[in-house]
Image (cartoon, rainbow, N blue to C red):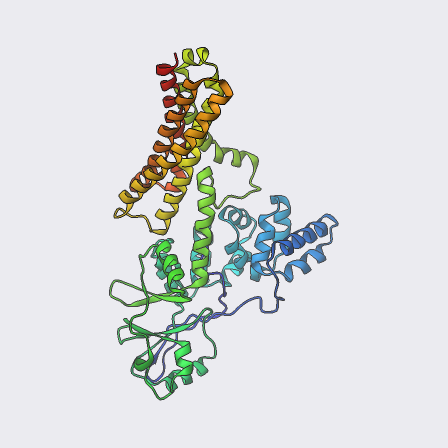
Length: 487
């Protein structure tokens, strides 16, 4: 889900309307201007949900419609996501068709697919017609070929060209994120001319903080912030006040890099150019907020083998199917750890205390490794960990692992001696603790870096691999040392 702010009700391409001024503009309007402003605090959302559910239960359809009419599309999306499919469909049918497109952009992909199945062809076209081009591009992959063809049929040539421009780039790139509503001017005109043109135009696209300065072949040569336009002498030329070196993005720049740049440089919008420096469009801060949100959801859900687009009220059979693969992988790793324990069955029978202490070694290694792997996965996602500094990070984490292992080995060894009155047992668990925590630190760096080089998402694969390593090394070192020193 990308740009979610404005929706499209009219589009016009102004070119050479004023001498020396050239503009590419997708004029946008907000479809819910008559809706009262609503708050988005969790308690308000809870109250809205309870009110709608109560009205549904008491079959007060008019009250449901009145509540929905007063809500922002994002709040309606929250309500739909938070209720089971049966009630969701009933509420969905009462949503204003002019707002349906905005609501579809706000819900997770799984919920979106469910809601799309409830729309007839006419309602779907009405919903899509109220959206910006880049928003339409986000919805098309979820539509059937027939519905897509129907929507394209209702678009004019200019809209289809803009849609093609957005769809020609992968979704996770700057080109896939951009809007095509970039306002452009020439550098050899005065600010007064720019003022007169903007007054003639009457309105600007949402999130517009700057105008883009281009040459005759539409190459980006600078940007003119609205602040400078408003505070500079109107007789000055654009070239005198423009920023000749704006922060810009190639169309194939990854969306994560775009988000990092927006954070680092406090950007509101930024231009997107092709390989010839020609201006293609602009990325706005609301697009980037969506990227950040999706990345945050992914970092939470991926370690559990779940998708951030999951529907929490999906059918039981589908949810069970989606989770089966991950549970199967975890079962395999558990069997490996159990097999290692089985190799030392005789040792455990002779020294029963080993069975009591085994979980401590594996658990401490797992926790230490999780700390490291979380740090590394985050660093890889943010780009702060690269091939240039990965070796230094590995050495650092090994040193941290050694220090922590020595501290906790002493503490756990002492506890074992006091608990079982066996100095040898305390020594064994202390040595095993040192070995496992050092291996945990090593694995916590090498696993995410390694799977990243293989093209696998580190957030998805690192957790299971790390658990396997710490369990196997923990049990093997503890029971192996016990076999050598105690039996």
